[in-house]
Length: 165
Image 1 (cartoon, helix red, strand yellow):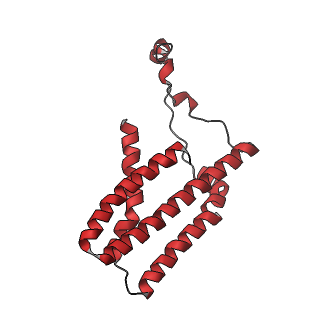
Image 2 (spheres, rainbow, N blue to C red; image 1 turned 90 degrees about the horizontal axis):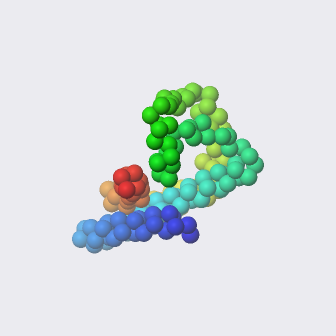
Image 3 (cartoon, rainbow, N blue to C red; image 1 turned 45 degrees about the vertical axis):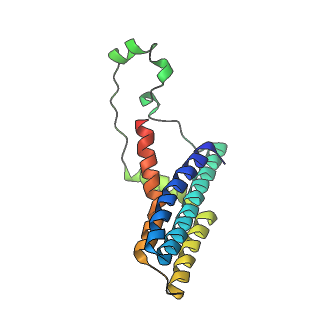
């Protein structure tokens, strides 16, 4: 596994321990629902990561990734001393192009990763888990939603921490 994936998995598992402790106090239904939902959500997330990673790798290999239009906006920490004078004299103010045409072009290029086999299987597993819980009359919607939301909320918090740090 890649270091970022391992780090994210660690954060997800820490958050799940908190949900586990909550579920232990609230009963067996909560424990079953939260953990099945958490595992389904985790599987969907990693299937999405893998799918998009594969799409980007294929586009890089085939040369379909265009030059970065915003390269001039990136700031390298090592260039601080060398470029201090240049920063004062040249300020470039450009806005990201927002056109419907480019949005549809992006959608057309990335539809394969959106409908990849891995993602479809992950969502199929989520669907089967819900059906299983309904069939055995053990579905607790609130508990299931709590378990399902662990991964996205943890991802959001981790991303915010990464921006600050």
